[in-house]
Length: 103
Image (tube, rainbow, N blue to C red; front, side, top):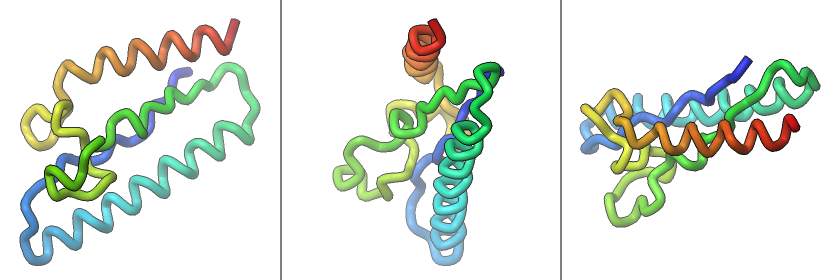
């Protein structure tokens, strides 16, 4: 079973109320992904593999785009909600890493 973390959402302009709600969602996403990592590690079940691509999805240069470090990398944005096909190469690398660990 391959498990993916919840990706960060795309950065959007600050708007009263919405910005705070997005910040809370970002925080919840980080906590969920951390708990997911711990749970899978504690389960010690070779049949469950976390493709931990979380850090590869984050914006590498948040100061240039004036966003949080936990916002989605702008190169992966599709329509403000979904990721584009560029995420496939990240998934392929994660699958290769998982295969080499499992061998």
